[in-house]
Amino acid sequence: MTPRIGLVAALALGCAGGERAAPVSVSAPVSVSVSVSAPVSAPVSVSAPAPVPAPAPVSVLIEVTELPADDAWLVTWHVAAPTIGIVFDRRLPSNRHETWRPGDGLAWGMAGDHEALRAIDGRPRHDFAVRFATDDRSAGRAPALNVRFTDGSRLLFTAQVGAAALACDAGEDGGRCERRDRDRSRRWRFHTAPARGLRIPDAAGRGELTWDEPAGDVRGTYLYAGPIEAIEGDRLTIVVDPGLPAWLVSETARRLPALFAFHAAHTGVALEVEPLLLASRAEPAARGDALRGKTLPGLIQLEAVGRAWDHPSASRRARWFEVLAHESFHLWNSQLARRSGDKRDEWLSEGAAVYVAGLALRDAGLLGARAHEARVVAAANDCIATLDGPLYSEAADASYYACGELVHFVIDRQLAATGGVLGAWAAIIAGARARGSYATADLLAVVDERGGDPALGRDLRRILDDGLGPDPAGLVQRLLRDAGLATRRIAGTRRLARRR
Ligand SMILES: [Zn+2]
Image (cartoon, rainbow, N blue to C red; front, side, top):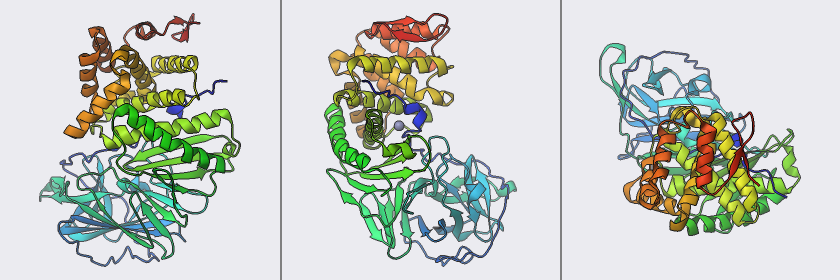
């Protein structure tokens, strides 16, 4: 029996590849919203933060305090040199101002297209503070600000909290503003109840934990806060929600090391760190069996959503495997090698993760050769149905997975003599590690170099720059045929079916 796989696009999988801090140098009229300064009963007071001078060269000291009894968080940013505001690293989701309550004398505004917290009186200060309730809403494919475990443990996505000093010169509307010290290091101090555990990749503590964030790297991490003892597994550390069914825990511990070996063997690069896996159960009483996953540096975060996960089945086993394969490949193509900061390159990192997950399913015996081709045809049909215009475009976001999988399949078949698409990825990863990052142009260069038939490079550029053209099904059918996968048109539709 063939499990129905290929649900990736519907699962809000993994795409935390990360937003880079974009330059902010736009005049920033402050649209003052609200500045409620209600009293805060908490270990750290928002209304009167203790001035803690940050030692050079740390440009910002970020104090994060979990308030488990209130299911809320306090954050204070101490900047080394007084400033009139701070600007947040991540542009999206730009919903902080909806629920984060600024401390005394502060108001929300914008600096370019990034949210900013500014002193209402316009006078430079060292300290900025907010308070917010745990917020596990999903906003697009960005990692949720918080994740809830069934036992009261919580995760916090630090990149949504990361901010830098805002430097503005005098002038109308607050003058021109820009991020200061963008590439300088930041120190984080995490606090919670004394007996409660805190953990990030490579560090753990009780009650308190300090993290020196790598300078200039704003991808962030998930902070774990809660009572769960981590399990030291084979090549990974696991923090498991007690509400996660035992069969998923054992599948994870068994499958992930094998997947690490699979990815390492095919890309020629071994994992340098022992990753942290944070696995939780969401909505255990709700119907269904959804899945969520994210990858951050040295970290995979997974959630099994719904009560159906209580019952093992071949299809759920395959879907769990698929999310493990997809997210773990992001440790290679988003962490060991970094994608460019251009969102348009996301089709490439996501397409690779989806396609490699299919290869890993085959390798593990969870997907047969014919079922794999059927999966590719399903992706091709999704691509035909959703792509309207160039694939290399932010507007094509909804097609990144399906069209990315299709493109990877075609390249894999066409480059079979030179290592297939994973051989191409080995070259892309090696180049990115030498130069700093990779982009779509690097894939095209490898295809041109190894492709043999120049038509392949032309077809790929056409899809990236223009889309599927006036006859999308015709173009996709030809691409699949040239890749050795024969299909027929389903009469009266734009869909294809695999020829028997
Ligand atoms: Zn992904």
